[in-house]
Length: 141
Image 1 (tube, rainbow, N blue to C red):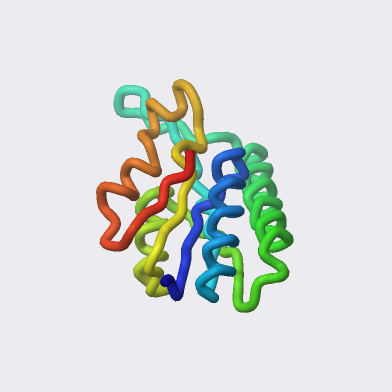
Image 2: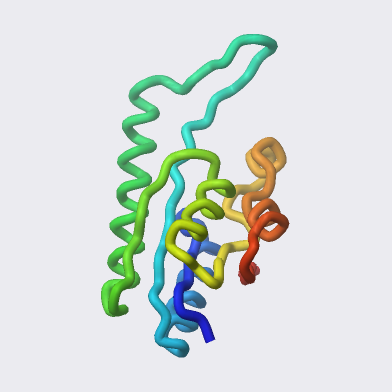
């Protein structure tokens, strides 16, 4: 059915469910599984000023991202050729770019990872992926 499955993972409950479903699909179709977490450094634009988070926040954010990759690697440890990767950039574009790089034929993603104001400000990653992907996207609710 599928040969290469990419799952977007941010540690949220829905991304954990997406990973579980992707593992199930990979097992059923003997597909290679790739997990991606995208490190996105948030900035705030106020008028013409761009405000970046303090250096200590960035270091904590990077450590958190690495812990998510470690967690994902533990989850997929039993699958042959499965791996988790950390990317940096805009989450939706990074997921789409990585899917193209690895030749994925399915993207599995949670319907939302952020909540409330953050989702409204940043936009919906899953919505962007669905609208711009050239391969099937399975959205987990």
